[in-house]
Length: 258
Image 1 (cartoon, rainbow, N blue to C red):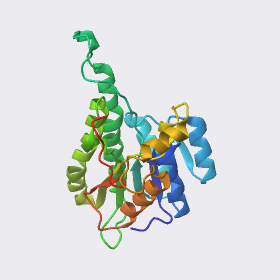
Image 2 (cartoon, helix red, strand yellow; image 1 turned 90 degrees about the vertical axis):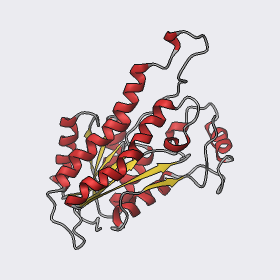
Image 3 (cartoon, rainbow, N blue to C red; image 1 turned 45 degrees about the vertical axis):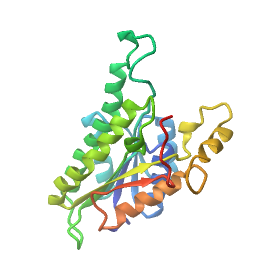
Image 4 (cartoon, rainbow, N blue to C red; image 1 turned 60 degrees about the vertical axis):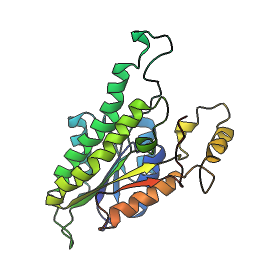
């Protein structure tokens, strides 16, 4: 699938995996719409890649449509990459046997709402816009990449909400691809492992913490680079025979219980 002179929507595009993807697509001649709630960071990325920033809550249909229209006014929308998401850690029950100590149900709903429902909201609306594209020689009208996590398959203690949301993204991949085959839109999913993004910068000594995490990886013994995620995304978008796949990007790690 040709990317040059097309537009793309990248959610969570202001930092981490989304920023790396936005930059990689821009280098391929794509007009990128950086979708994020962080206006300062989103504007900075958009300016750096000659793109457009769109303030957008991925769970809000009207805001997602506005971001899609910002893309289609620049060029036909052929690529959508879903990187927006939030994390949470809490065990299912507390240690005191009290109902009040059980996992916060509102937080569980929030994680599902943003990570899973937000992803599907973007997919359903973006694919609608893609269905209007003129097909390429393969009959393709666009491609979607979603982002799950190895936690979808190797969820750790305290990750019940996060793993549920990411497992849902894995589960929707095949039926999504089957639904969209009718209009020539492909859908694939990436399950990143331990990727070096700002999510790990909370530690007092972030460098030492990340080096220690990297020792648990099979090979190479380091955290992944956001650019490596972006490289895989570009391949999933451009390789017209990649469809309905969930691909782990984790250097062989299998997460332990904790």
